[in-house]
Image 1 (tube, rainbow, N blue to C red):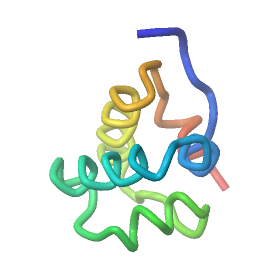
Image 2: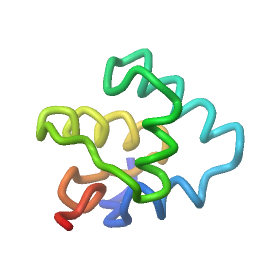
Image 3: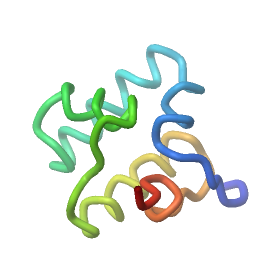
Length: 80
């Protein structure tokens, strides 16, 4: 794995191909971070964020695998 990626979820999402976005959405649902693609879309467009810190940590682990670099929960979903 490369260094640390400090981009937010919307920024990372925008940099993914359509196929990678689909794969990430599927992984987030199958890993029980969320139950719907609508929620993933909301996160990707900065409309909402996971409310639970545990969920943010879990999402960061999954995104890290997809992008190939470490992603931190507090930069992935910065405080508003």
